[in-house]
Structure formats: structure tokens, C-alpha cells
Image 1 (cartoon, rainbow, N blue to C red):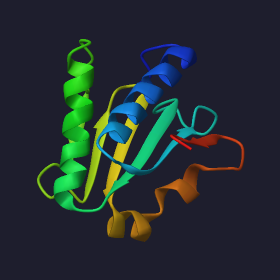
Image 2: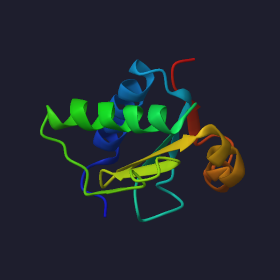
Image 3: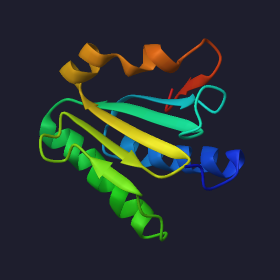
Image 4: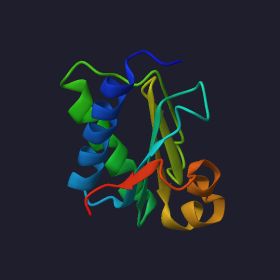
Amino acid sequence: MKTMTKEQAYELAKKIAAAVDEKKGRDIIIIDISEKSVLADYFVIAGGKSTTAVKSLCDNVDEKLSKEGIEPLRRDGFSESKWIAMDYGSVILHVFHEETRDYYRLERLWIDGANFEKYGE
């Protein structure tokens, strides 16, 4: 369920992307899904080169946001760390092991041309 304005959600998405980028996340994108879903306003999708990297990326996001009093509503995938999802209400973070990301290609389901941006490029 969305819990903030779209502008606030975008700022949170950028904070999440920055925390992933800080730990060398790969191919970070922010996708505006507000016109396609009631679940959230944004997805942040990134990749890691190993399961250890995937977990480290998510741990860094958790640590950075926790310092600001922002906690995920749900977290899933930490046991295998091939695809970790962290739900922050209006923003959902997906961090994939590279092979898992290639397999599921979640981006292609949500990108319609103009509703995404690559972070850090």
C-alpha cells in the first residue's frame, strides 16, 4: 500500500538507488509504476555479481534507511539471496543476482519507454 506522495516516493527511490550504488550495485534503474499498479509508485531494480553482493547491497540500503527511521514493511529472499525484495510501501527494491535478473527480466514487464531512468549514468 502506498504511504506517501509520489514526490516523496521518488525521493525515497533515489535514496535507495544511491545506497545500492554506493556498494557497487549494477545496472540500477528506477521505474515509475504508478500508472500500472496500486502496489507502489516506484520499483528500484539492481543487480549484484554474487549472492554475497546481493545481500550486501540490501544490507546497506537497510542500514542507511534505518538511520533515518525508515524500515521496510516486508523483506523477502534473504535466505538464498538470488532475488531480494524490500517493500517500503511506495517503493519496492528488487536486487537480483545477475543470472536471476537475466532469467526473470522484471524490467520488461514494467517499462513502457518513458517511465524509467538509469541511476548513476
